[in-house]
Image (tube, rainbow, N blue to C red; front, side, top):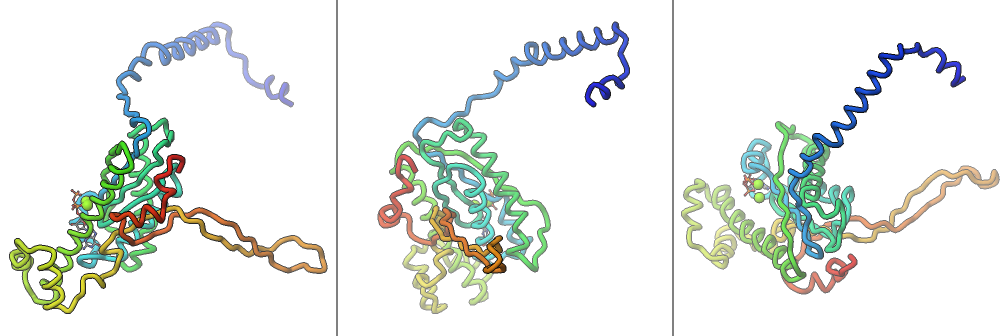
Length: 298
Ligand code: DGT
Ligand code: MG
Ligand code: MG
């Protein structure tokens, strides 16, 4: 068969065939030697060994994006849950992410200290996280915003930061959670003054100028009967994603001997999945409860 097929290929004149072979040889040589040197222009961006690699993403111009897509103020649970879904997808699709922390329009992903994913190249970490997150945001949009059309493609910036030890990593995450707390307390009072007292944004801003946390708690409680500590944990603490083992139960039809034909078999297996917690990560309790995150071989 093969010989017969081969025989049908028209024979090329000898001279043309020689020219073609020479051309191909020159082409291959050029690709390997003449232009190969441009590889040296690529900067080495290997992350230092044994450091924690953190990728933080942040929504581009989400002030405008939130306005255009009618996000509830100051917190829209649809938007926050969509962010969490995207981060879970990133953890499942990519390698070696031990935990993630998100609030507002940002998410931080912590890679295993000794990860060797893509030979620890910073650009690979950053671009894979950002592109997977952004495509997930569009892909899952309709699951969270059923009545709100996505009007234009959102974007996310990314950065890689290395932390040399456990303390600096914990301080980094504490910084992000403290930021969540400060912003959320401010925004909760700010929008209560506008929505419930009819102040303009400028008036609300003036009212809050120079106030401390205790003053803001007091305004919320005395003027709006809101105990800030009863506000949803996701708004106050942000979201932590850690790997948890869950039992997955599936029922499937199986081929069985005729006497028990038609029966279904239940199969259960334990699977690690990124689960959301809305808890304090500044104190020691979280780290004591989840020692596996900081373990060297995590
Ligand atoms: P950037 O990051 O420099 O490109 O600029 P923005 O506008 O993204 O600013 P950023 O990241 O400092 O602040 C996040 C914005 O996202 C902030 O204006 C509030 C908005 N945002 C995030 N989550 C929500 C939400 O649940 N509801 C509302 N209304 N806005 C939100
Ligand atoms: Mg932003
Ligand atoms: Mg932000």
